[in-house]
Length: 264
Image (cartoon, rainbow, N blue to C red; front, side):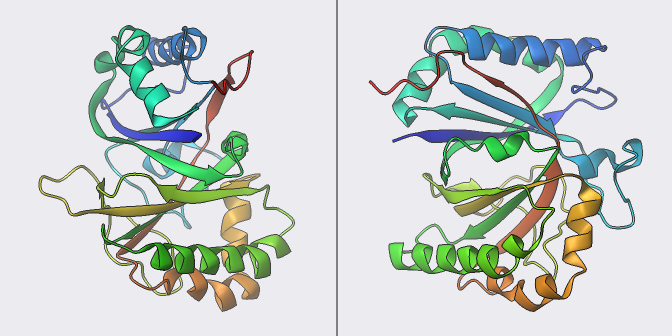
């Protein structure tokens, strides 16, 4: 079953890992280029830092509408044919490919897998991607998952699809049920969250995630001020059993393996 590895890592203070004119940026790009070209590696790789963590440095970011996070987080997504495919690569060529990342990253918050549709999640290559993380109890039932998915799909139909600026959406559930839960319960009518940093003993749960493409953060924030958003956001915030909802933005870079997906 095709999966996307999703990982979150802390960035060392003062480093711009998205700028290839810096040593840190060169280390990161070289590592992921090695990953995408190595034998048996993923066939898609996307990475970016939370824009909210560096809002003041981005002239496209309306800092009045986003809440900063600190420390800076790097998110990475890799497309594999299966979990087994990922594990085989990670325990082989992948280990050497990322050997220099500790020079620029402080820690790994987690590395897990999600199954999203459509696949691969090329929406991550949008100019800006809104990432929504909705956490649920680890023992959520299949019926509960289906109900939550249906509510989000309804939101896409009656609200998001009415916004000409939206560039696409991919969504789905995590395979694991022990994602570290980030943030408190979402405020009514808002999908923003400002919790920062890994915490020992953090609660864990199941994850429903969505990636939504936008031309800019300003376009997304403008959508959140519309009546159609305000009238329908309850479809997300009111999902039964939801423990926490987190939203942030990334501006991903990406690489795709030339030979494409393997299906053996």
